[in-house]
Length: 404
Image (cartoon, rainbow, N blue to C red):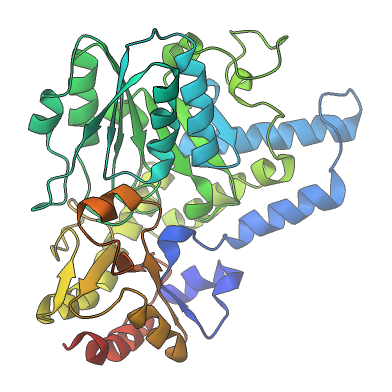
């Protein structure tokens, strides 16, 4: 398990009396990310693309940021599209691919995903694209390949699905889904936003065509990332200015360019991961070593919370209380019989325990599970920078609220 003093010293925003358990909405940034942002804005906040030294340095800093984003997912730099958010990037991708499809072509979406990987595709229905829905099974709250099989046709052009739901927390077999989608002759677009803060993402091993990540949930600044397999990105139409060529990837997906100071800060994520890896017994790639440490630390942290929730007869945990790291991440959403989802977080506020309630933009999942009228779910989301002492504070305050 990671040394919590070392970890927390790397995150200035953790110097607060509040225990932060709303991390699935966004992690706090690493100190190295903040320092790089300040350095860029203090010294080289100039226009890029010029011949003078400061402009060249600024361009190099931004290029280093793209390189870091690519490394994080084991991608190539020319497969790495950056933008303001996963939602914005998915809308750009949908518009780009729609220009290559015909009326009557089909896209499959789920009712488990965050709306970021649903709404942009559903919007294409107004343009003549047929939308089919891959529905979660209420008894397991998961997506099953057998159900996808019934939806695939020779007109299927893309399947959008979640690698890990931001409300259920259970890990889907993204590689198996992507493989079946490719066999059907279609493209796959996986939402990895809720997965990436907890496990190493290897897009080559997953063999997906597109993969979405929010880097502000992986200890970075507010930047979204879209990985696209090179030939898949080349196949889409430009959503940039008319003079940006179809072969200019990733720029043709980045109208207005990227936010310079934020992208220049992305190597700070790598600085932090390498610092973690330097203290790890895991060898090899520093990113893999760091995430191996995160996995083990989070397993230990989540255990008392999941045990408490399992012991409470009025509580239902979405996705169950199995703490196997191969099965779930420590994003834990639950309902409490007889209580509106808002009651528990508001009570915990008094103890400076930051927990949240709602549908978390997985509105269709909440609707399918019949949870909208009770406010959705209460969600407690941990990261490796939480501490055993914080979890003890949480479980002690939570127990009487849930009848445990």
